[in-house]
Length: 432
Image (tube, rainbow, N blue to C red; front, side, top):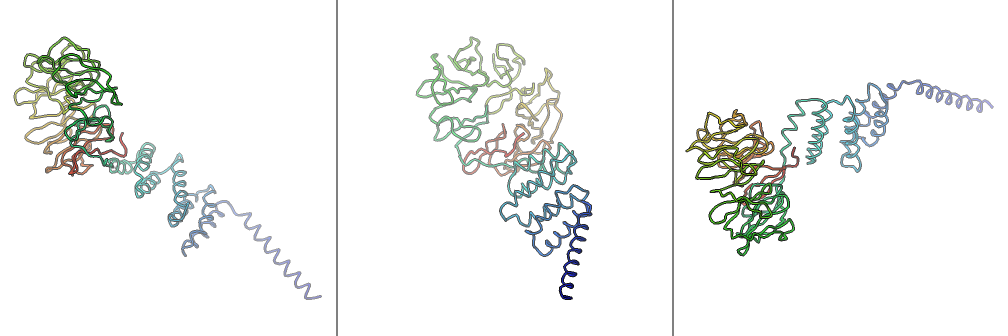
């Protein structure tokens, strides 16, 4: 009898202790409960038992108190320790995304997320995160991290004997002495079966084959035939192309509607204007017959495709001096050489044997320190350093190493470079 009473008393005490524990738990504040969970998880993590710590920390992270960030920090530590276990990498990035989505997200969270993606070669994701972080926090550390990684690139494996500057998202390519057209990514669009080919513009290119000059579309179908007895042609741009007939150059549309005005020479249109020569003197004309720069010069500086005009400016040559003409004004200080402005960025100019960069006001933006250079395309410019070509940013920093035999201007995030294999295309993983 007494033994039974003792058992009942013992059971009653146990129940009482259990009730007391439950009451104690129930009267804990959320913050106390959160700290208790973090403490239990920390003990497990100290002995390497991360897998059991995770549910504790996930519960703690779901409690909204002043200690939530602490819980999330410990949880990310656990996730990282379990990164090679299926599903935990995604849990880690999901938590980062949740932290970055908060209105008061700290710049360090964006930096942590960006570094994680960079470590796993996810450049595009990292740059996107950095852009968002810079916009929201104005953090200069994030801006520096973005600038140091935004020029990551990959090289197309296809190689060619020759690749022109990029124009309209395509390039002229040469192989075995014949010409074709490739996309800016190096994908062949028009096979190299032509004796000569113009730049591709809008929906066509002009070609010469077996004595005929005709236009082709993107699918290599003949769409127009030049019936005049022409000896040569230039590059097609803005539905204008120059045609050589009876020793004089005339403007023509892509459908071979040929103008009557004869020039000594007329080059490629850009921004509605082209360099042209008449009576042995050079100037710049519009789409019709108006001269915006009178033919008073020994030459107009053009790029490889014959384009001269950009950002309202051209360079004209008088003797051995090159002058900037912008907004109808001729600059006072000449240069030894120059490359035309593109539609954005600085122009490359030469003085005292070295190349630097100016804006359309003629203000020096990057000093004369390079052996050779090309004007900026987007936010990069090709430069030669000790016989090798690479790219600088608009701040003058080398951001793509000088390791190429030659390099051309960027357009839409791509640029042709010459390697030991031949001409290839490099593509920025992000271009803005």
